[in-house]
Every structure is written in structure tokens, then in C-alpha cells.
Length: 336
Image: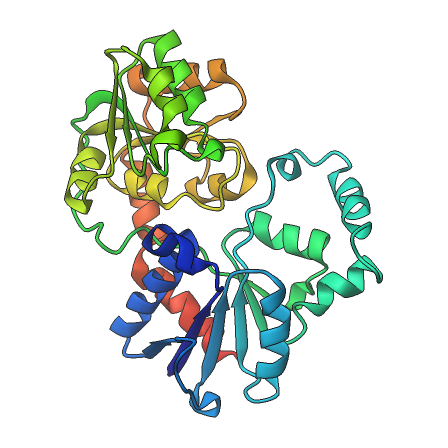
């Protein structure tokens, strides 16, 4: 198949660190190994849209409707990955849907069901990464359930090493650590209060963004901030760490945690619904707003003789390998 990938315009700001771009590139690499041709669409290029078997768009915004509607008149084989992370309060539903829709309808001039559904009309398939995301699109955006197909994300393509289960007693966290929704400040507070070794790696942001983390760590000898690391360093940390913690308040999947699980880490994860679907109840689920819950779970994961590993690593390898996910993508594309 010949497939075009189109991504939302704002990606030019965050470039390689953008999660939506990362998902598209990973899927393109998987499909290329299957023998399919993937063209990354450049706004300065010229394309014969009729020659594509599939045109797959990634991201959200007004362009989804405008570009999709015009493109459907040329080539109807359109697929969309909106990649929407449901807000934290959606994960604790009590009357959420009604309140959410009432609030959103104030900003719409027409009936909210029509306005939100219209955005997805041009697409034959809308791909989601979890049941939670599927439900959110159906209930909050009125996307017809019959055009939704769930295609989970795979673990990273470079994760090929055999997992190690002789682990060092520390907790690892990798993310854009300056971003508030990653709740790194609570993780730091938990490490200080419960006295476990914490290693933080990833983008620290600029000096202003990093300042709160620097102040929170202060002189704590049990917390090590590495900043940006190479892929080789990342794999080394996955192999050594006993625990990987990702207590985000908003998270679609959290590939770093999935990679860590593959390498044999115990996973401490927010109890929000999307990410935890990937672990088959084989992880420590925590309230991301509760420092004590985070700290106690990490200590339990570090100290407890009861382990979710190696069963978790085997589960991840069996269900989220690039080959497995590639087959699901091809099935969706072939069904258009």
C-alpha cells in the first residue's frame, strides 16, 4: 500500500519531542518493514492524492474538519488519529459527561452534537489508543462508534534487549520533567518523605521552567536529576531500575512506562483509565494527586517480594510488539 501521513501544523514547534509525531514516525517505520510506502506530507510539496491507498491524519484542531472535508472529495480513504488524552476529571466520571457538554455548548453556535460530530464525518476510520479514549470520543465528541477502531501503541522500536530481573533498588522516571501534568514535584516530595532513591531523566525545559524542580530537589542526596539522556543511557536505566513511576495527571499511554515494563521494571502508574489498560492489572495504581499514595506504592514496589515481573514483561512483549501493532494497522487500512 501507498500511504500518506499528514500531521497537525503545530508540531513544528516541539519537533522531535512531540508525542503525536513520535507515534506517526513509529507506525511509519513499522509499516515500512512490512513493505508499505509511507510518505510524510510536506506543505511545500505537490501530491497526487488519488494515488494513495490511505491518507492518515494525526492530531486535532479545526484543520481536521476543513482539510478532511476537502480531501474526501478527492480520495475518500481517510483515517484520523486525533490523539486526545481525556482530562483527569473524566477518569472519575460522576456526572462528568453532562457537565462537560453543558460547558462546551456555551461556545458553540449550533447544537453541540452536530458541531462535534461534523469534524469526524469525512473519515472512514478514527483510531484510538485505548477503550477510554474511544469512550471519550463517543460521549464527549459524538463520534459514531462504528467508525472507531482501537489500535494500541507498541513499545519503542529500539527495545530489543532481553529484560533483566536482577535490579538495583531505585525508582526511575523519564519524561519532559518540567511539564506540570507529569507531577514530578509530587514525585520529588514523595521521595523525600519516604526516603527512596529517585532518578529523573528527560527534557528539563529552559531555566525558568526547571527552577521549581531545582528548588524542590535542593540538596536531597537520594534524588538525581540527569536531564536529557541518549537512547543507550535510557535502555541502561530501564535494565537497572527496580521501579518505573509515571504518576501523570494526564496521559494517553505513556510509552516510557511500557518500555520500562518490557525491561523488567515494576510499574507505578496513575489510576487514570487510558494508560492502565495496557498492563492487565499488573502494576501499582496510584492517585496522581496524592503524595502519600505515590510514595507508599513506590516503596511497596521496591521492597515487596511479590512481583508483577517477569509476567508483565512477557505480557507486554506478546501484546504490544511492533509486529502485533503493525498487523492491526494493516487490518484497518485494508478494510477501507
